[in-house]
Structures are given as C-alpha cells and as structure tokens.
Amino acid sequence: MNNTLNEVKKVYKEKKKQITARLAEFRAKWENGSDIEVLSELVFCILTPQSKAKGCWACVENILKKDLLLFGSEKQILNELTFARFKYKKAKYLVEARDKFVKNGKAEIKKFMRGFKDVYSMREWFVKNIKGYGYKEASHFLRNVGFGDDIAILDRHILRNLKWLGVINKVPESLNSKKYLETEQKMKKFAKKIKISMASLDLILWAKETGEVFK
Image (cartoon, rainbow, N blue to C red; front, side, top):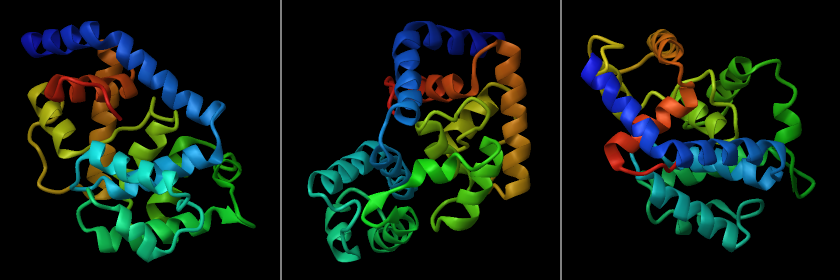
C-alpha cells in the first residue's frame, strides 16, 4: 500500500499544476461559461462510452464548428461522429438530449441545473432522463462543468486503480446503481484520508496511466 500510495503522490506532485489548471477550467465553465459550453460537455459524455475521449471531443468540436449543436438533424450529427463507436445510437441520444435544453432557439441548461439542491439530486435526474447516461457518464459530465469534488467517475480504468490501491478488493464485472454508490463512498473515504479531492484523484489516476491530464 505504501509503495502504491507513494506513486499516486508522486504523480500528483509532477502533474499538480496541470491538474489544478484543468479543475479551474472545469469550474470556470460553470461560473463564467455559456450554456453552449455546458451543453457541449453533456453531449461529449454521451459519446465517450467505449470510445476514446480525445476522438469524441474532436467530434464535438466539429459539431460546434458547423453550428449543428442547437439545430443539427440526427443525420447531420451522425456525419460528424467519425470517432465515436455505436454512432447511430449516440446520434439519436444526442439529439434527444439536446432538445430537452433548447428553447426558442437558445440553450438553457444552466438555469435548469441551478434548480437542484445538490450534485447528487442533479446526477439522479441526468441518469434517469438522458439516454446513454448511467452514473459514470452523468458524473463525468458534472465533473467537467465543475461539480466533481464529491462524485466519482468509475470507469474500468479507475476501478483497476482502486483495486491496485487496495480501496476495493476486486474490479466488479458490472456496476449496478447500489454497487456504484458503495464504491464511490469507498473512493471518497480514501480521497479524504490522503487529503486529495475526488476530482483531483480521478485526474491523477488518469495521468498515471496515460501520462497526460485530459478530461
């Protein structure tokens, strides 16, 4: 445990500036960013399951560049999902999700999100109402717009690292809601114990494996 923990702390020390800057960027997206920026993160996290994050973000950038985010048809969106797996299904989900937050030609997602009492109730709504979202995707979206301090993005990569750190005994084959929330609590306790925020710990574990801090 000591060796593994030392490795985590070493990565944090090496990448702290980048991690701090990236988390500040996420917070700024909520505090000073536009509804379009927040909506972009929502659709990004519809695309990411079983796909490479950088490729999915390139898809979002193309959608934005061609002014398709607010009004693009399912077919037009589909043409831009070059790097996303299961693109037919995701194009459909993206348009359905987008249409929940576009009123009279304007994106109005921030006002809607301000109506929740906390990040947990907000996440529950997104899990239940956005097709393609489970707890992992909803948590990823909320972290990317500055709400990541108390929630975990439990993908296979993070779960492997939690096992490596001794936080969990084994990597579960699948995560139902109950198991997800139980594992999240274990990660939260561990983060508190080592005095690193949940959002920082996620980026540390990503950086440990990939060598970079992305999102």
